[in-house]
Each structure stands twice: as structure tokens, then as C-alpha cells.
Length: 157
Image 1 (cartoon, rainbow, N blue to C red):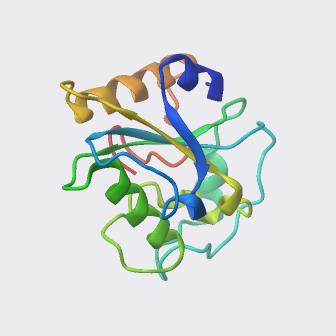
Image 2 (image 1 turned 90 degrees about the horizontal axis):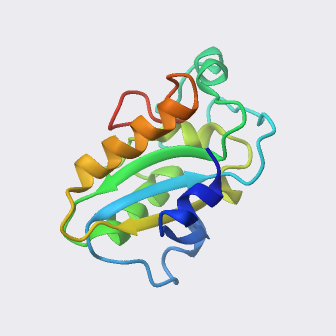
């Protein structure tokens, strides 16, 4: 599954985590994705840049890697400040801070984690949980049942 498929679904943003504090990220509920331009296999790190003690073994990371996909993680945002709050917590976790966001933490074990981009879709009246589940199912359909790299179980990291 590629970045273009998200753009076709009206995802916005496509910014780096470091840009969250200065970019206008929505405060509504929605879903988001972490994407990596290109499909070459990455270099995995252990530990990564995430909060101390939050890393996975390298063999698990290699097994979870999805060939030919630029989409690495799909998540949902239902907190008070919506997408902005959720993504800011995710960014803080990746910078080694306790933040209340440990889903998708395998992202922070990629050598190029700071180059990854995030995008989002405000779901409006649609339930973000259902939307996230649908996106993960669509991904699995296109990738022989595999979830996105950093989604450990359907609907969470």
C-alpha cells in the first residue's frame, strides 16, 4: 500500500514528527498513518529512540516488515485535542519521553525514524475506531494478511 492511496482517500499533512509543534495539525478526532517514502528494507535498531525499555527484538521487527509498502502504521485519535494531541504524544514517545502513546513503537527502531512522515484524516461523524479497523483490513487485503509494520494487533500497536 502506497502513499498515493492515502492521498486518494483525502489524507492531509505528510509532515515529519519534528514539524508537529509548528504545523497546523487538526484537533478533531480522526485517523493517522506513519509513512516512509520508498520500499527498501530499513536498518533496524535496538534499542531505538523510543522511551527506554520499549524496544522489540530485531527478529520480530524483521518478520513484521512488509515488503512493497510505504505505510508503516495506522492509528486513531480520539483524545481531547484530537489528532494533534495524539501525534504530539507519539512524537514525545519517540524522543524518549513518557507520553501515554506506546502504540506503533516499532517505528522508533528504524534508523530513519526521524525522516518518516505522518498524515491524517479527520473522520467527522465517522467513528475513528471503525475507520482505523477498515484501513487496517484494506491493508491486510493488499498484503496477504499482514498488518502494517508497527501495528502489532488489529487496531493497536
